[in-house]
Image (cartoon, rainbow, N blue to C red; front, side):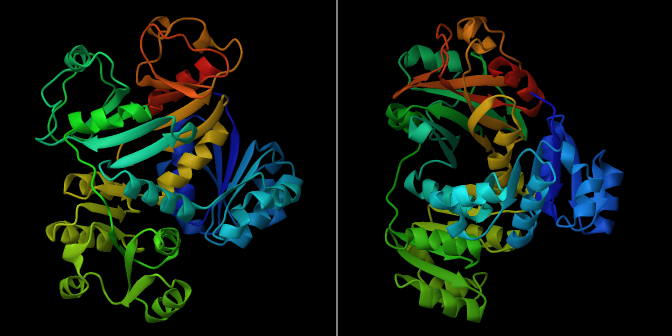
Amino acid sequence: MKKMNIIIAGDGEVGFHLAKLLTDENHDITIVDPHSDLLKLVETHTDLMTIPGDSTCISVLERANIKRADLLISVVHDEQINLMTGIIAKKLGAKRTIARVNNIEYLEPKNAKLFKSLGIDHLVCPERLAAEEIINLLEQTAATEIFRFSSGKLILFLIKLDENAKVVGKTLDQIAAEFPYLDFRAVAIHRNSKTIIPGGQDKFMINDLAYVVTKPTGINTLMNLGGKEEFKIKKVMIVGGGRIGRKTAVRLEKAYDLKMVELDKNRSILLSNEMNDVLVINGDARDIELLKDEGIEDMDAFIAVTNNSETNILTCLHARKFGVKKTIAQVENIDYIDISQNIGIDTIINKKLISASYIAQFTMGSEVTSTKVLHGIDAEVFEFVVKPNSQITKKPIRKLQFPNGAIIGGIVRGIDSYIAIGNFRIKEGDKVVVFSLPSAINKVDRFFN
C-alpha cells in the first residue's frame, strides 16, 4: 500500500475515527479542527499532526502542507464548509478531495460532473449510506449484517449462531465433508471479543458471530445450517425522525406499513406533512405505554435511529421483549457496539464506520471497487480489481502464501461468481473479495498492486 499524505478536516468524532483508522494503515495524517482543546487531547494520546483552525482558511490549509496532500477529506457537520474546503484544497494542490454532504440532490449522478469541475472528486453522505444498510437488512431478515459485492454476485452475511444452528460443534472440515458443493465460505468467527480467521480444524460454537461470503445460490443452505429462518416484514416502527430516520422512511413508505415516533413536536409536524404514507407519532419512545398503545407487539421490525445511543439500545430491548423479531439500533459510541450485540439487539449501525468504509477505498494503492468496515470487530472486507501481472495471479490460491490475518472469500469473473477454493487461479480483471484484520491490510494490498 502506498503511503499517503492525508488531511482530515473535522469537528468531532467522525474525523478522529477516520484518522485512527487510516493511521493504522500507516498513512501520514494531519487533522484540521476548530476545537483547540480537543486537538490537545488528541495529541496526548496519538502521534497525529494537528492544526487548530478553520479548514476554509487558506493559511490554515497551507500550514497543513496542502500542496503535498494526496487526499483531503472534509467531514465537518456543515456541508457548505466541506464543499468549500474541498474546492479550495484542490486549487491549492490537493490531488483528491472528498466532502461529506447531507443534501441527497448533490449525490445524483448528473451532478457528479458539476462537483468534479469545482474540485470535489467524491461526495459521501453517511446518513444515506446508513439508510441503505437498514433497507438491505429488512430485505434479508435472517442476517445480522449484510453487504453486497458486484451487484449481489457475492454477498457477505453475518449470522449469530444459537442452539438452533446445525453447524455448532462441527469443524469447517467436517462441514465441507458433509456438504462438498457449498456455495459459501466462512471468512471469520468473532468470539469473546476476538476475531478468528478460521482454518479447517476450527469449530463453530454457540453465540459465535460467523462472517460468511456466499453466492446467491448458497443463501438458503447457509440459513438452514445457521438455524435461521427468513420471515416476512410488513409492519415497521422507526424511532427518530432525524436524517437517517427520515431518509429510511422515505425509501420504505411505499413498501411497508410504517409508523414513526419522533420526540420533537415541530419536526413531527414537518415529517407528517412530507410523508403521506407514514403515521408520525409525537412522543417519547422510551415510554413503554406509548409503545404498547401504538401496537409494538404487532411490529415485525423496530428501527431506533435517534441521536442518543442509549435511547436506541433501550428501546430496541423493549421491542425484543414485546416479541419484535428484527431490531436495528444506531449506536454511535463505538465502545457500546460489542455489548449491544451480546445483549440481544439484532443489528448495530454506526455512521462513523459506514463513512470509513466508503472513504477507505480511496486510500488503497490497488483498485478497490468497494470496502466494508465491519461493526463490532476490528476488520474490513475489500473487493479488489486484479491488475495485469499482479502477484495474486501467479499461483493457485493454496500456493499464494496469502498473509496471516487475511482470507480470500470469493471471486467475481464477468457475470459469474466463485467461492475461493485451493486450486482456483485468479486472473487479470477478476474482482476478489478479501476479509482482512488491520495487521494484514498492507500485505494484502501488495498482492493486488
